[in-house]
Length: 143
Image (cartoon, rainbow, N blue to C red; front, side, top):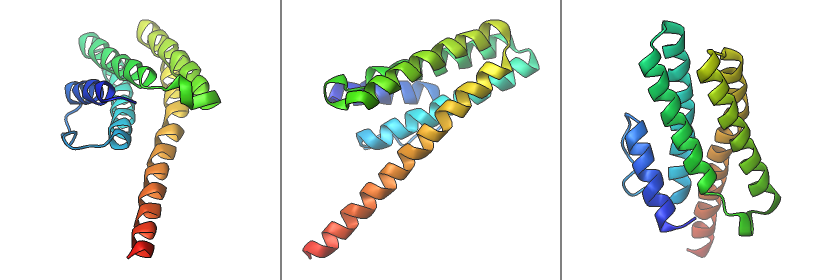
């Protein structure tokens, strides 16, 4: 991930989220915020779809797809190995399912997308917690 990624991700998150806090966020936090924003936008799109609010539905799906594109663009295929390829394929699939959901008011596609993305978001949070815990342990040992 590069500085350009962080700048683009920050702009996308700020554009698609009501929450702040991207200033000073590291790459890991920013990616976590993108996952949160993606899941929020998908959930909001479902709500708009249920209400019959077509303009809001389109806006939320568009923002979800923009976040998904940013996540996909942040993948480092050179050093990411198999995981990077699998995430790329997953993001591609979820993007197609979200388009299906938008065009056909397909809640099953929304549910499937959320079922695929939520465990990744949750795992991303656990990775951060483990990393911070390890850093704290290393700092204590060095002192």
